[in-house]
Length: 350
Image (cartoon, rainbow, N blue to C red):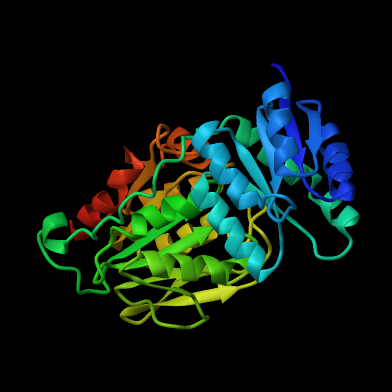
């Protein structure tokens, strides 16, 4: 085993600081080197202690977590795991934090903080260790929003058919990766089915954020609704999303079946349903993410005749899920993030 991951815990709550310290210290591969009650103290301790990873609360005194994160990612980029509340505001702020460069997040329960955090000790430790291996890039000025790819430029025929379907799965780093893909999609692209590992209370805010950034109509899926071109479907909170065949068209199936690979929604559940219902009419991609959810589903898609690709390691925040798919032989292509939208469209038109 190499050196333990050095963590600085930043939270205005003394109770949460103590709990996170105790929970992380249970893992022999993690060392909590210090804590800070606000960003100004954190800034000094980062200089002095040189941690590998920061856990950062969103709402704190003297400087809010987002402002601190933005300064940090511009001046001294480092892996950050946000600790946020399971509220509507918490969801919005956490998605902004991921856009600023945070690697991942964990959620604080509204009630029974001590018990709730203890139940997630393994998840917190896993996310901290994954963050230590993540690729963190300096924050620059917000990029100009990319124009969607014209269908004619991406393929030989415009997309006005329900005969093709695109499926995308992601986890850590995926909220921004999915946004980057969807903002390049033309408004008449094939339907896009999404599975992203996020808490149930975050799904609506995430769908609304994607809808603002994409020419597609992005929505939370409802059980039984028709799958239509020009739309992207995200599973509603803490639900699996599947695609089922209904005669000559597809419909969404939303259910609360048991977690798969510890996740609900699960990428494997979505991908396997697309393999069954669409087979060679599907195109699928796994983007950045921790773990291996989706790898076996992508293999089933490839075996069913679908075109399959994964995000490359250089552009992924965490190459766990894409790397697992490559090891299984599930990916026909490995593509950098900026080229994924165009490649999905080309394959869908093939």
